[in-house]
Length: 190
Image (cartoon, rainbow, N blue to C red; front, side):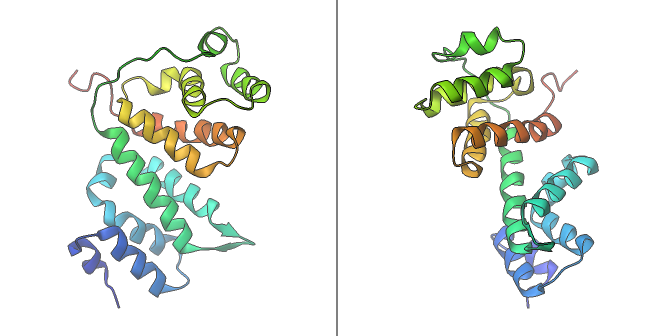
């Protein structure tokens, strides 16, 4: 049986944690949270407890079926979110693009996410780059300070969880809350 110490010493601690969770069967929430955090020890230390609980609870909620928590699925979701957080927290340069064909409509809308959904309804054949552009414009304040790699990772995270562009937009809107909680301050040195 894999131990918690094995996770900390493993070449791939996420995979080792996955093994321990699979062997453990039904876990208590407290034990599961501790196991989930082990492979991300350094990163966990940088994030406030409220955000860690939010990430854990979101992963558990996503993996609960008929009041039964599928711990392996919850861990996979948690690990994906923590890996996204790693990318978000890496400093990098942002190079501003054109904003795409629909940028102006979103920028001038009183309700930017409402306009995003209206555009998605009207233009069902919108390209992935246009969808990413309008979502970024709708959440421009939340994305300040993120690198292009981080912005791409946020969009990829949402596309992995949504089938249609509407679902992707909804997932993107949800993950933005995590982005705002974990991104490094723009002027960290001050």
